[in-house]
Structure formats: structure tokens, C-alpha cells
Length: 389
Image (tube, rainbow, N blue to C red):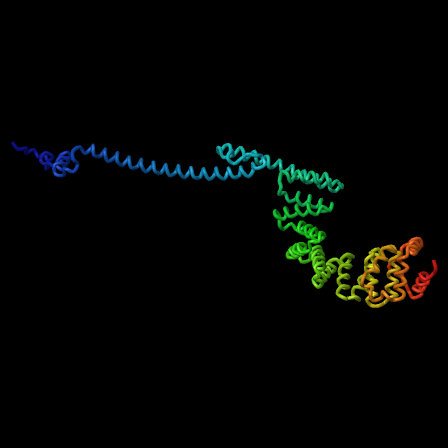
């Protein structure tokens, strides 16, 4: 019997449920192969496994990078430990046994290095103090202790070289200075001292090389011009020697040694008048420069001024003594007046022991540079020389 009650819900079209759809799709599409839930679980497991594999790969990569960085840090730490533990005797293999040990040894090495630096500074100050007091041997001992701990300590090398230089131990000073310049090639004082050593030991080629090296960085170095001038003079390069000595005199116009060297080269270059003026100026400032008398007398002899030459030599007798003046007669610079009567008489009388004794006993005071010898004085001297003994 039909339902005529007007129940619209009962009259609706019957649609398939979700289960019906599933069963229908299962029959139409057999790709699920059975239990869908099991297949979904398998897919999840595969997806999880893939993620785990990727995570494992990432962790392994990160661990490798961390290990690489750790090795670099450890290597740098070991190298620092090796450098700082050189004075303590700890080897780099011992320092590299573990990062913690390397760090400990590095700290210990640094502490030891600081103590050593303090000891070095104290030794250097003490050595300088003893050197200033004239105790060179004590100062040298302290400096050698510093060099035993650090053979390349530039301060100790220089100060020990200076002590040997002052004591005349040129070979030892040269060795120390060469070691110093290998460590600190720009140490000007060391270059200068080494150049002087080469100069005074007759190694003029080496001295000139070092002097030119000094002049590259300091064209106005008076010591470099002095050493270079002497080297050129000894190797007979008079023009170069004159140039160096001229610059030396220009830089130190009151330096008598510079004036004397310059005048000597002028005289060798036959610049007699210029040299004579310089010698006269030297004797006016310092009447005790014995060789200036000889060179001034040579200047007068070159000009054939016999009386002036004799006067200068007589003046020198009262200043430096007859024996020294007697040796000057061998100078070839007097050849032009050697046979002049007054000069020959002076030479003959000065070589007599009795005259030397008379001059020595009669000289109550030294003659000054302004002592004038006019013609009358020359006649008195000549009369005294001719007087019978």
C-alpha cells in the first residue's frame, strides 16, 4: 500500500553511500590490490624512511664539517704551542696529544715567554749600567747570557759588539754585527760601526760598500762620508775622496779632523793655497795638531817660501818637540827647498842631539799658533844655529 501521507523524506531519491562508492571503485579500479589501509601505511613508512635517510645524510655532513673545523683549530693551536714552547723544551707532538693539553701547554709557554722577556729586559738594563760604570767584562757576561737564551736578540748583539769594538776586538765585533744585520738589516748604527771596523782594518772595499749603503738612506751622514772618503783616499780615488770630505766639512764646519782630511786631499791635488788657508785656521783653533804644522810647512815649501817653511817648523819644535820635527825632513814635499841654505842648516842642526837638548831645556812654554817669525827672528835663529857648541 502506497504511502500517501505526504512524507517527503521517504519519497527522496536513494543515493549510494560512501561505502557503496568505495566498493564500486574497488571493483572498477583494482590498482589498490586489496587492503587500502595497508598500502597507505606502507607509503607512510617509505616516506618516513626517506626522510630519515636524508636527515642521516645531513647529520653526517654536519659532523664532517665540524670535525674539519676542529682539526683546523687544533692545528693552529698546536703550531702556536710549538712556537711558544720552544724555550721550554715541549715538542709539538706533545702539545698535539689533545686539544686540552695543547691549550694548557700554550698558556704555560706564554707565561714562560713573558718571564723570559722580563729577564731579558732586566739583563739588558743591568748590562748597560755596568758598561756605563766601566765594567765592560761584567756587562759582556750578562749580554752573553741573553744571547744564550735568544741568539737573535738584536739589542744584546749590538751592545756586545759595541763593547768589543771599544776594546779593539774587531773580529769579534764584526761577527756580532754581521749576525745582527742578518736579523735587522736597517740598523743604521750597526752598519756604521761595521763600516768603521772595515775601514780601520784596511778593508776599504767593504767599508766603501757599507758607506754607500748608509748614504742611500741618509745622504747627509757625516760618518758615512768620512768612511767613504778614507776608502776612496786609500784606493787613490782622490776626486771622490775630496767630494766626500767636502760634504763632511760642510756638515761639521768646526770638526778639525774633517778640515784636516779635506786640506790633505787638497794638497795632494796640488791646491796648495786652499790647503794652506785651512791648515792656518786649524792651528789657530788648536795649536797642538802636530801634523798640521808639517803640512803647512810643506805648503810653504811648495811655494818655495823657505823662510816661512823654516819658521813653521821651528814653531813646531816648541809645540811637539824636536824629535818629531826631525822626522819630517824625509817628506818629499820639502824637495823643492831641501838644498836651500837656511833649510839645510835647520835640518843639520835639528838632527844633533845637543841641539835637541838645548831646545827642550830652553822651552819654558809652548808657542802659540799666532807666534810670528819675521825676518829678524829668522836671522836670530840662524845665528843661534851657527853658534859654536
